[in-house]
Amino acid sequence: MTTYVAYSPNSAIDEFFNSNTTVTRKQCDEFAVSRAGGVSSALRMQGVCSYTVTAGPNNLKNKLFQFRDKDSTIDMSIMVLARAIHPEFVPSCKYLGTMGDLKPVYIYEMEYLPGTAHIMARIPQNDVSRQYNTIKDFARVRKELPSLFKILPFTLSHGDLNTMNLLVNPETGHITGIVDWAESRILPFGFALYGLENLLGWMDSAGWHYYDHYRELKNLFWQTFQEGARDFSDADLDLIRVARMAGIFYHYGFNFDAKGVVQSVRGQSGGSLAYVDAFCVTVMPVNIR
Image 1 (cartoon, helix red, strand yellow):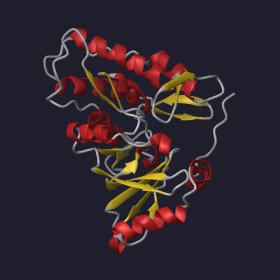
Image 2: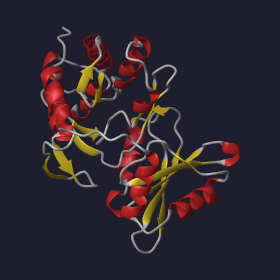
Image 3: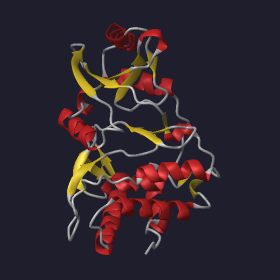
């Protein structure tokens, strides 16, 4: 039986500093303030391999600083590519070097994006309007996307596109940013669409629950998706659906190291296979033709 533990940002922060570096939280906070002024404030949602704070004068959160361990550094070429593809959603990012001699942290300065992590926005289950906005934004496809024809192009794919890394305006549901690109990879187009399923329901100790109107939301996604693409055939859509299914198995079925390299198949003790079980029952998209 899977055990679910309530998330605690302070526990996550303590775990990062106890396990990954000899640098202290105070040193990181002081560094952020020295760069941006004001006071340092830790984000409510922290990563496993990083410590992230905001800083700025007069309590303005205009800069974000992320301190990462040596095994989870950011490939800056990926960040440049991600920002070129999604300039409205991806923050600017600078690598500032390291701090500490033994088990140092690698420091990145980023533009602060507005919004709240989707998982913390707590959009009500029956608030269809805000859910519509999130789904339609998620389905956007750049007009520059190459024609798919008979094969899927290899594109930049976010490695952890879940509701913790998707920022939304809690009042409207519109997506305001996408963070944590460290595990991004060049993969067949459609692999990252596993993230759609996370927007159609919620997981708790009893398992996965779809919204009553999840089929309506899924239809909206594919309709918006097709409207944004060009030279799009039914065969192309079928290929993308297959890639999305592969993305679900790839993301939830394997263990990865900090660089996103597959290490092993996940066992039953973790919670990820519960997503595979749930999504494979209803993952085939609703017929929209």
